[in-house]
Length: 481
Image (tube, rainbow, N blue to C red):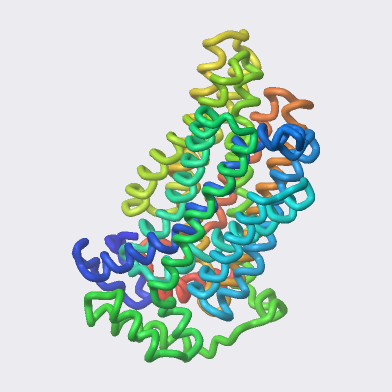
């Protein structure tokens, strides 16, 4: 994020931003593009299933897998549960072996999952392969933001990490669009295998990209490999002053005597324990906005208003388009505003649009106007969510946790976020059936609680280097209440 807002006096000063055409800007941008191939695969793999399921539900003799409503849910949710385990495992692996090495390994897991899904002869094999694919998706979701944050300078960290969210929604949009095109132009009932096979492209690009970029200098420094850390900084920084500043900060943190800590030591350190709970709370906030209720079930919501099935499916593409545009705006905003103000504004918009959608479904008579009003509420919700909340969530996951346990705590917090994702996907259809339009008032109430949580518990991380931020949070969260 821009260093226009100075850090507090308790931290080392942040070097001024360098011009946008410097070696640092160009090289770190390439690193971010390579790493976010994992986010592109994440987005495509979570979006492609919506178009593949109708074909997978055909009888085996017709090229499908004979899915019924129960097995449709199992196939869909297997990726989410795999993602929870993958993000948890990847956190520890990235602390031990490094962010780059972990992402390289995840590219292979992606390929195993893709190939297995494409060739799956039965529902059982498909569920197993989707679970493996989910492990790669979850691992990438927790590792990519950390890797980019540790490579980027403080003035560029926010925008570069936010590219992760842009690639996620771009992958989802690509999945929606390619699903529609393949379904339209292909007469093969096995077209779902082609839909799934396309996800091999970002997986391959992730592996190639990781072979071409260096390891994180901060991870190298945490292992005492200072000469290698300096060599990487010399590749990705154009200012000797910035290199010396960052090296001094990393050496100072190492001198404090951080060691890889077990869970008993982590949870026994009050300020780190508070950060973990904040990270888990942010995951609850992000998922219980109801974002995936809309990403997974928009066609069901719109058909309930009287809109035709084809029109409802087309509107799902609209979800992807709005998400991409909103995220691009969010990347621009995140360089100019603090994390907390963006979250508070976004949650206020989410509460208003959820309440408005509930009112539309409850009181407007069935007809085209009701369908368009409901769609308008959904798109306004997505604008608030993808512009002001989602990019900030992933950015905070890369910033909040101290260097010596950043991987494992980020992995744990993101794993909880995936569990909350699964809970929303599981509970939303049940709630919609039992409560009807009142479901959206329940979401609005939950988001009021999230608003209070952000206002009272979430620290501001704007304008601070990772090392300076670590010292600042330790001081702030260690202070008596």
